[in-house]
Length: 401
Image (cartoon, helix red, strand yellow):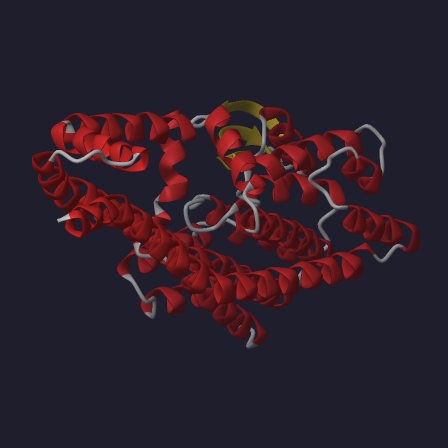
């Protein structure tokens, strides 16, 4: 959630901008940790909440941000100033939209803004996680390492997310094709065969009557069914845009056999990878939990991390807080507990992230290898049952002649 704020820094200078946080209390705490005295803070108008979807239409892809991060690493290693670096990147940007964003950031830097502050003004391109990582790099004086961490993290995240999504495209296509074929047969083929059966006047089996009844309902009331489908689609779309709808859809998605397991492992990998990357960059665990909750991109795990952050503030350890939530597997909780006891939380989380990345890759490979034969058999069985319900009576008629 975005908030507009006005504040005064330790030198008495006026500061203003936007901050992304799960709620207003977290936003205020974050600003106070930066040494700012808050004059006012207000949530951004709801109409701006669509900014998270702008990237779909802006021509700026995730791969562009990965490449940008690697280029920034090279430029900072070469001791190129931040202003000059962004000017060079803007001149060589892949798309005009990205060039415009980089030019705006360069202008803000030239006016005296920090890199992280300039990036935070473009949340549709640079996430809260990205901005906080850059801010940590600025404070530690290790921007080259920070951008390298970001490039590696974004590349891993982009690769594993793309693989999971691509694995679901094929079954979605097959299922859509199946329903289209069934609809065409019900509205074009079955009615003609039904007329022939009625002309003969022979008694037909119950399952044939059911198929013919469904066919008549679809053929005679096609416009009504189409209107109902569109209306239902609109209501469903609006519902999943609400908080309760997003949470319901998230829970339902995680309960789907096989696919739900892939999503669960994907989000667990993302959580562990986020936390590990931020800890290595010097960001504290509590702040890391707050940021990860805002960028995990799943309402269920966002709620888990928000509650865990609250528990950690109350004095519980991270492992004890995670143990309250069945969404977090026991092996991950045990590993985190070991990290707390040994003081090696960063490497432990990195190991967890690698483990779940392998699990996602293996699950996706297994799904891809099984989905094609299963879908083909299911499609063939569906068509065969539909045809048999009409062709068997026709065959009986022909045999009785």
